[in-house]
Image (cartoon, rainbow, N blue to C red):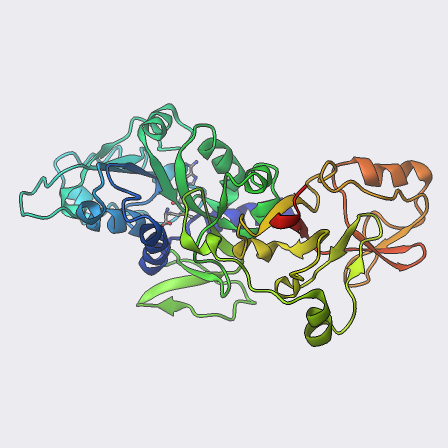
Length: 395
Ligand SMILES: C[S@@+](CC[C@H](N)C(=O)[O-])C[C@H]1O[C@@H](n2cnc3c(N)ncnc32)[C@H](O)[C@@H]1O
């Protein structure tokens, strides 16, 4: 298969990863702990859902009364529009419904709405959901789902991985509260980082340390290198590393400051050597979040996993690798003649006896990197970094 096709197939496969109930419960509990009324009187929209599988729908339907929800809306994407093709069979629930339509079942998206105890059994749960076919395929960008977005107060979902950038732009077009799942590497996307920097979006309370296991379709084929669990709680799962929740709903974890050592103690007990300064930025390289010195007053470059520990009262975010932090962290040096190597010492694509002209490109193409001077002309690019400063030292 050509490379492009292979990566399309991979992306399509990754779009059909379904979130397990316990992850949703644990994350939502953090918002509820911080504010027990976080969902009260709210309309919650779950776009990009798949009610055959969706634990998001199940979770919010089951907690409808507890949370004091006003309305729950969940939409699904038409089977025929999905990139990942499976042998589709409508569920018994759908087939047994009076509105079942054989011609529509795979061509149209569906909408499920929950507002009251329809079955009059004294409780509200999935059995009280009203459903119908949408007039289109349920694409989150369609006019009918856009209308639902406007109606919603809170949007919660695990969007298709292959469309994360588009989804986040869609999500932030209107001000809505949200909780969504995404890859940790999305932190430095141009659609994401400015929001994080301005504290308009942050990481959720329960994140990626050991990877997340998603339910996958029965015909899912594991990659040859896959070494993790394939079944959990009786369902077929696939582990995805580097996954986190992105949100703009407050939770207690982000207000807990990191406990840190002084620079002297970090050197004595941790790094065993002084921090290095970047060659082209007035900042120190802190390769491990637990080694952020408590008493350093300048700018520090830290791994992106810092965001899992970030408290806006403790730190200020100034920029990130490849996201132009030129204003807050201006570069202090241009290179005329250099040899760039990766953190592992291998030459990078942009290395190798550059001319002055190309050297300028290095500084101006928006893909700025942070370098550690190894030896005169040899500069080593740092891993992806976020630039921070203690809040108390903010200028
Ligand atoms: C990662 S899965 C997550 C499903 C569900 N939210 C969950 O976590 O269990 C993303 C879902 O979005 C659907 N999808 C893909 N493209 C879409 C689009 N343009 N609009 C709406 N849904 C889409 C996929 O088919 C898939 O069912």
